[in-house]
Length: 254
Image 1 (cartoon, rainbow, N blue to C red):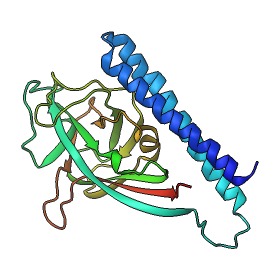
Image 2: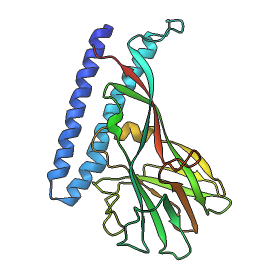
Image 3: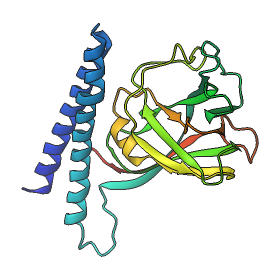
Image 4: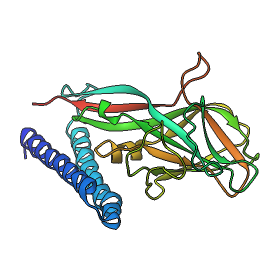
């Protein structure tokens, strides 16, 4: 199969996948059955996203294979670009104050402090629409700045769960927060470390840059004492709010 024919087939397949994802999103928005809604969100839509990623990987592998004799020349039909996406909205919620909104704070907290019920979690959302449709994600990193670290010396696990329903940072509380999916990834954060922290979120962005995207929630180790705080917004050269740094390969439409 020649290059033009292959790219045309892939382009058509990707367009159909986008339409399928939108159809499933509409089903989620309209079905009154909560169990069916969660099934569509966690299983069907995730499967469609992974299929879309598979198509993207196929294009990238095809390009590498067919341009391996270019002696270092860059593919004329593709460019490597990067984009910085700042935090769109973010807020922490508290189990100890289940009906209080904490949007007026300059930091976002997660983990546990003292009392077993004094637990915090952080909700974050980024505008992934800034990623062009004709681009393949190569690498994605979440950059945060640690301003509070009360973890023990050995550190603790932090998990990320995708958010399944719409929410607003001005109204979100523990009792009135969004639904979340199963754990998507986890990292270990060492105790006593401050400043910038870079987290590889490539798999998450590749899965969720298609709609719907409601962001994610950070959950600390809630069985031990240890609160993590990250800067919520830019407050000078050494205090930076969370942002995504995304590298992508963008092909030109024919």
